[in-house]
Length: 100
Image 1 (cartoon, one colour):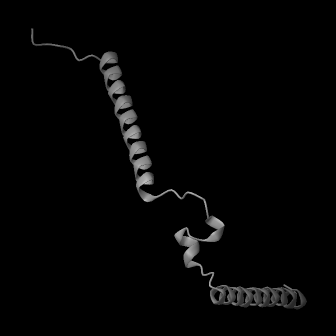
Image 2: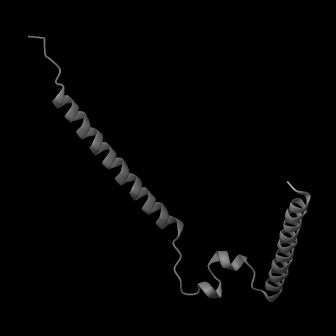
Image 3: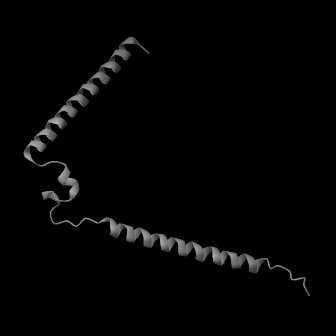
């Protein structure tokens, strides 16, 4: 690489690092202002934020019921498929009876 190209790339990296530092400091300032105003992030995750007022959050028991039902359906369909496959193989290749 040419030395001037190397310096150009290092300048670009330094500019992007400076931009990231500036964005980080502005985000920290915004979070401090929000915390000082009493609109912390904890209430956003608890479902009591004003922006989430009137929305219904899906709770854990409903999700476990849905996933449990899905598991039962998947297991029953798998059992049905293997049962039919087993009988199809037995029908295609019957075992010879030699006891008579």
